[in-house]
Length: 510
Image (cartoon, rainbow, N blue to C red; front, side, top):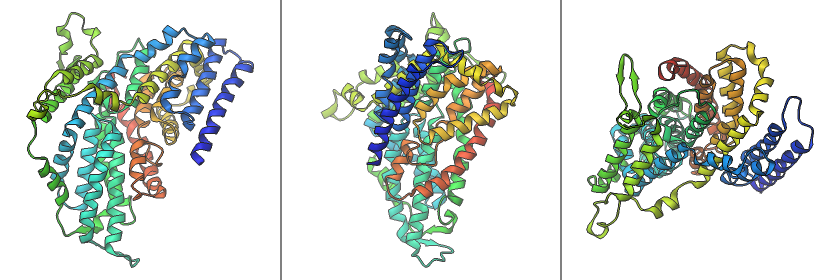
């Protein structure tokens, strides 16, 4: 009932905001097109924040509203829904679908986890590493859904033999161990999915949304390649993941995880891995294609590592600039539809992937959300609304750059706890870009931290799908998640700006 009330209020609030902005006089200095764009933006923001309708449906609003209001033509608006980075996302998702179809993602996860032993802290680290690695290539939601039942099975097997030091409230050691180990393990999986997702361009739709906006709105700046993004984002993952693990093990539950001891061995993961048998032919072929895709992404453009320059393979073609990461994604995705699976004789004629699986599993709502965000962002920039907002923020010119970065990160972290990460990035990107132009700050100095911190929402179940999934297990309470998540939000606000300052010059020339 509460959800319906919130959605209904959001629906009418969005429509009311839209009409009021259109009917009232425009603020001083704001043109007619900018005022109309502001009305559309207000409508979409209200609907995105309250989820009055599906976020993908809201993404379709610009296709109808902007041409009807005379802001842009249908051709201009619809072209932004075909941004090449949307096809990068789709191509990456198709490759992930192939991994899921042949259970390759499960094999990878089990092989990582089984190497971390049977003590509580290493088990949590093993699950978090496996989650982060997979989330770089498949959706955070799918990764969390896959690892949640495995984690719960491990907990159920190990806690009956648990002993806990310093149990002072008279509760059984088994119950304390379940509440402690179980909650830390599940929180670790959810947070590792969000952290790992930023490691590559295809790991999160939030990254795709940011890069698509940057390519469209900042054509004079060099486009950020797959390798350049990872040069900045991967070190954040490498630092933030163990910090999150250490924090959760010490402060994430009612007792430190170091106080829990298990007498039995970690048999669940080993037995599941053994039941899969040796790697199948389809798994080998999908792994080869996925590995080749990652290599081609990394080496597509020239890569400068210190004094060493690695020439990109795209220079072998007549027009290297015409080849993008999305070209690689779609080429390798097409390969999956053509290569025979090599499975048993019953399935010998099957390919590695069938279209019906992709059509059924592709998150078309996210595709329309990103496309709608690109369309809205383009209109905000083209109508002059972004410039007007930037001039209004000129009073911030006296602030040091590091404080501007912190302020943007705090704003994004606060918004993304209750709003779609992708929507947050798409709503704020034009405003932040205009502010940078007004203040004379390099756009990437604020846009990069904004894009990364948008994925770091740890405090509430509604903040991210991984948070919601592990909350649905009923092993986690909202106070538990909030207590752990707020601290990690703050830690993220410290790590991300430092990483951009330290790595942005080398990777992007900021």
